[in-house]
Amino acid sequence: MDIAKFLKEWKNNLILLCILAVLLIGIVYLAITAVGMWNERRKSFNNMISVREQYNSFMLKNKEVASNKLISEYQAHAEELKKYYNDIFKIMSSQKKNVAEVSALEYKQQLLNQQRQIREMAEERGVYIPADLGFREYMGEKIPPDTAIPLLSLQLEIITSLINDLFESGVTRIEAISRKKSESDSLLKTKLPFSITIKTDMKGLISFLDILQSKSEIYIVESINIDTIPLDKFRQENNLGHLLEVNMTLKYVEL
Image (tube, rainbow, N blue to C red; front, side, top):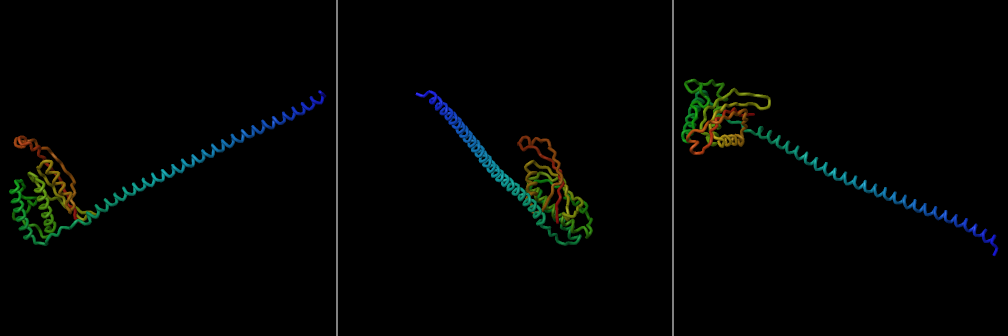
């Protein structure tokens, strides 16, 4: 066997094997790198998809939230507008009291007749009322001027209505009722103030305020002051609770 030839061939084969090994290692490295790069790209792609899905989900959710919020705000605003215009409509639709045109003498007779009827109603209900009902200056022989009759007629009608409401609510005593100077402004044509002092329990007071609120006419409770009256023996023995002394100023509004 030619040893020199064998060694030469072996050397050549070894070099070839080394080259093949290097190539194989290179191919494996490239393959691993390629797989790694693909995995990274796939991971990145998947992350992008995930981010996009989260973004879309977020936008959709927030769009719905915004939409619901806007709808809620719109509905709330619509309700406010509805209430506002209902209030305006209520004021605008307030019926102006039709007071018959009468002379000063006719008014004086109406006043006396109305006072008598109210006193009779008060006696039937056991309710105390003052003698003048807010028209003290015309209790005697004094006749009001003709120019004052329209306002006095309206005030008499309002006071009569308020006294009937007080009767209905179960008020025990009407201590005083008086007319105040009328007011006017650019929006509301006329405000007619009245001062009322009554004695009643809490139920009667609430009932009276409820009646005012439910009336078609517009009444404004401008001020109210409430004092508790100490229990007397009768109310204490019958568990009737405290009476209240209520001073209030009401304004009747007429357009």
